[in-house]
Image 1 (spheres, rainbow, N blue to C red):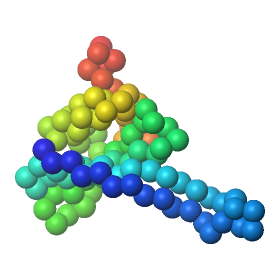
Image 2: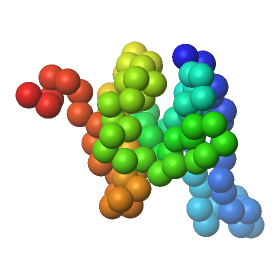
Image 3: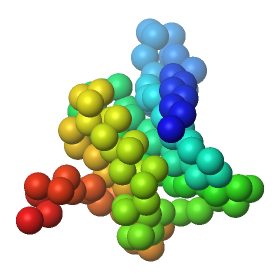
Length: 109
């Protein structure tokens, strides 16, 4: 598995007092192996949380679905993130357009 991490800031221009209308700071994780790729976003103001956003395979991009939660690369990515302190993992459901928790094996039972 290959992991790429990039840091991003999405912000409005500061006003005269240096305040922002909006300010989002986050890291994007790209987990890849063979043709499979998963994209994860983690906001710096929630250091224990990471959200799987989408996946790609070959030249095709996909929204996530339930079956992706069992994909071997996603499971490896979850292990990597948990070891990095991301204990609250979630995924953006392509069906519901909602963030849903990724349960650890011990929480499923």
